[in-house]
Image 1 (tube, rainbow, N blue to C red):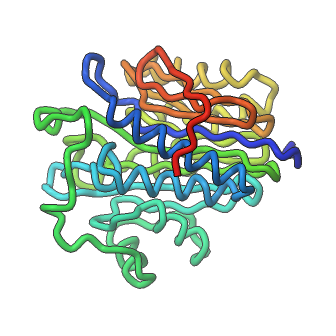
Image 2: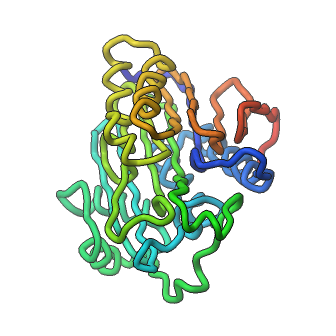
Image 3: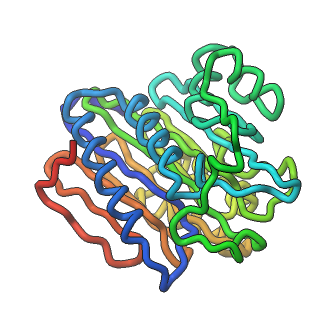
Length: 304
């Protein structure tokens, strides 16, 4: 159960689609700077929901990851964006799927959560909602979208993947999670993966917050984030609960990564792909940033 203990924790991911041998120095630097800002917000008693919203918004806007500005066109030649957000304490959630040409999909997802009785809006309906509520629309997609770090034009003809996400525990014991993606490269028009689905892609309750990344079809079929949460609630240790879901993704032929934080401030960031861009921090510990197996701690840095 949640508790008021003034401790906090968070984790960020920039996708489990990292390819061994490519240089992710730029994304690791960005993740470190963003993690330092998230750390400051949580130290200043920001709500977990606001922190994950802020973090994913920054990841979308950077163009460094396969989400927001770094998204690629689908088989029909246009970008379709998916995002979701969930508040653990209230179980309130919002999502958008197949949203075209809005700069901040996770913000629109939060708008769905706060301004409608629904959990998800998709396609034209999501765009109409975003337009009506004044979310920033992309007027020139051809110049706005960019290839993210570590992605080549050849990747755009393959089912490469990437996602961004954030999970957080605030000083009141509140948990939240958010996830955003442009989807797999080469996806069919209208394809929707796990990211906007509350349960498979994103989950937060009183005990745990989770964001998934990887091949969405396999994550959905393996149960995704909610299946981890249910295992954890049943008494299975955090890492074991996550690993069981990842093992099922692997058995089904896919790969994935997970970031999770519990009400006790425990963090787990495993993956079964070649790498996962990730960062984390918690009260009393240094920020950790990594893409491949070797993580590095960075004590003392407080980026404005």
